[in-house]
Image 1 (cartoon, helix red, strand yellow):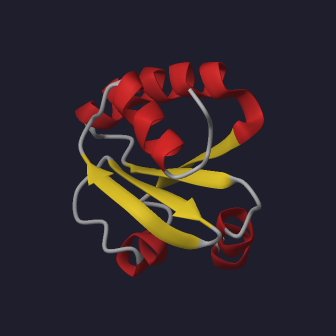
Image 2: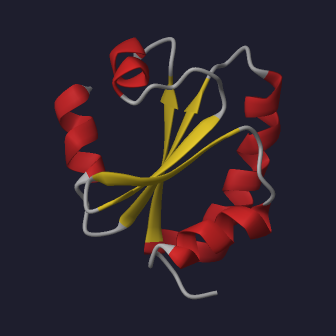
Length: 103
């Protein structure tokens, strides 16, 4: 997963990674919000979900201490991170402010 993850975040597109746990209530609440974001922006930004229980090495590397944690990557580098649930408009604003889309 590590090398494929590097390929994903080194995309020409902005990449939003959602580190989650299947057992996490707030993570479940964030899922439909991210789906709505994806429906609105289409393929302009990649949205990737990473299960921390199956990808502990990545969670440690990116210092994910609570879930959900979203990290926005631009040119392979983390530019923004947030733990907890955000609303659709707030996520869109973050993506827009980092050049991923124009809302």
